[in-house]
Length: 456
Image (cartoon, rainbow, N blue to C red; front, side, top):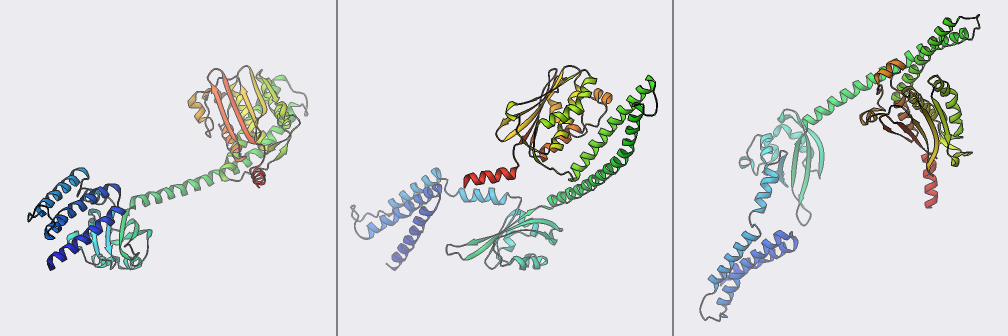
């Protein structure tokens, strides 16, 4: 009876633990545990009925029949719930197959488990080191181990001398029991040596690129200023001669001066583009936005671009939407005019007949825009994707004829972005191209204040 009492006590405790597992475990494990409970209870109840003399079959011992129920329950669990398959399969897939090194230690930092990747780093086998303090396995890493011996969850980068100085991403996760006491730690080491080397190479390359960019910007600025000053003098004296300030000129002489001025003007434009690009890349361009009359943009545009349009027998049209007549818009007038001039100049360059139409409109209450539509050759989809790339032009034949460095559209795109706007393009080969500059009606800071005020 002492033996029976002890056995029953163990069975009761085991069944209670299983019931606790049913409550706390996921659905798949609940099915496994339920069948285990049934398997455990069946022979126990049958044996209790027999010992207490409650069997309806006299002195027939029902315990073997209870074990039959146990066998069926275990069979059902093996077939339906894959009993005994889940944990080994999960560990084999998630731990054994990991390229990261996994080391499990107990509360005294003694090795409990290692995966194959960790065995390679530690140069040992689990069966030989289980239960041995980790510091005895890798004595060369004593300072590192002492540093993290009693820490909570950790994520940092370390270099292991025993692994040839390779760099690892270290993660330490505490293991706690139900009462919150620390029972061990899981240490995960991920080799990031190649990643760190790639980062260093990238940093070196970026540093070289930045140095080269600074040198290029400095050279462009110096060359631009040094060339632009004598170039302005050349253009000024040529204008004086063409105006016959120093005496009458023959027609051939006037023609030569006109070609000289045209070439000098093109060179002056290229210098300005190069300087603007250098300032944008160097971050030295400033935006001075304010409210102004949009009609002033069109007036300034006609003064500069109408003579160029007339030289090519093109019509340059300007329009302004009725809702903007007499109203003011927001932006940097000088920079917007620069962007518009760049786009219109590009349209005039590539358009051989027809018109170039510039229209100022308001697509919504929060934005205003400028559209530039030409009747030029248009662009292919590939050309559109590269239209705003620096130093790129679609038609090399026209580029050689009219010169230029292919910076006008790129500069316009960057300046519009700096003014919190967008520059879009639509084009069809053989039909023409439309550029749209869209800008905010108010500064983002002022708009934010107004929206905040409305919410309050």
